Length: 514
Ligand code: ATP
Image (cartoon, rainbow, N blue to C red):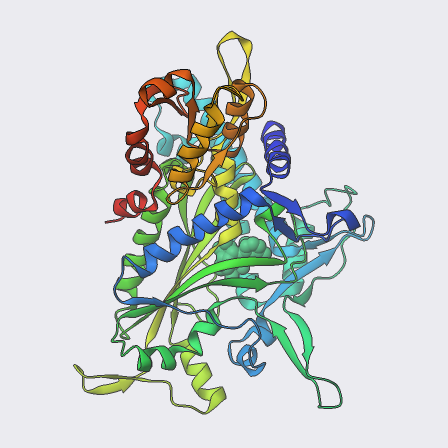
């Protein structure tokens, strides 16, 4: 684990050193859990967004996009349940004065039991070799069965307390499990209290009678309140979806792990409206579709898993997370929720406007059901960054840091380098840049040795480097170096476009999705 922490620290400093992510307001000592994206970060982030947007709106003829405002009528958040129920249970340690989410402390305790079980299993696998039967071992080994029973009992008690919103019981679980504050090491805990995560601000001057408005904590409500507009003006028929990418804000109590949990972040959400009774079919469809979207990036199929929810949000009748193996464990990057007709019905009730769909086949009107897919851009960014980072030992004792970014997402697709800064090579290299730049993000680089220039491009994940040398002037060929294998081949300038395009275009990534 310490080793993993180390790697994560290196990734965070790499992100800063190479212009991916900066702490917000850094020269004023920073603003907690708020981050800025630098020159390479913004390109990677835009490419992730484009991949999602095009997978939704180009590959599905029944999905359209919108861009709704961040400010919305405050009653929307009353209707959605956020004013009353968008809370986290918080608890303070009296000695360290540190604040924690009570549910997270308990989830971490459950994870500790899981870790113990996994350790025992790993030891036994080593001992028994090929003949090892994991299921049998877990059932029959007394020590493991005992840990598993304690874990399951804790899990059940926790789920019950969360479902009932029983704050005293949450505290009692923390006490009974003897959970200590990681800073002070003591068990001197306060009561558990609910804390609303929405940011508030005022709209209009006080003379006008200012109104309290919220910074949206999710983009989904902007879609629900535009359901009728889009359905009518787009003449949409069920099933159909509305996609949106935009900022969301949450006053997170515990903001940790870099851009994993931020107070200002970005979401990519799609609400898919279906006939009542067909929601489970579409829930299964989107669960599968979304995992395919992730896996097509080639970060490693074993890094993903589903986590089905046992505690369902008040509006949901099925929910699952897609979790990704970050350096700090499997964590949610995306949620897929069957939200029933809760949101549209609530908006109908609170606005007094009829929000229904007339189904010409059934010859009746009803409130559609909704399947939501909701993914955080920043968490997606983090998962791509973490799984791409490698410190690679090279022959001859050298090392390089390379980002094996999926090529279609890389901020720079190719870098063109004259071998030396004379003899007409820079001019020739500029000529190549001026041709490629219309199709690919292309860098020109003539500073330092060629080895150093390669390392710089490896560190930001540039898939191709093109080197112009004296032979180029004679026969119109260049060397094309590939980031991951570091292999170089001699190719004609005329072939560059095709060779690069085949590998880096978003198009080839989208084609994997069919
Ligand atoms: P968590 O349990 O981690 O707080 P959540 O279940 O509240 O997340 P949702 O409300 O389902 O998250 O939001 C959908 C997606 O938005 C999440 O899967 C995640 O990728 C992203 N997200 C949510 N909160 C944050 C945050 N504070 N910072 C960055 N991304 C976030």
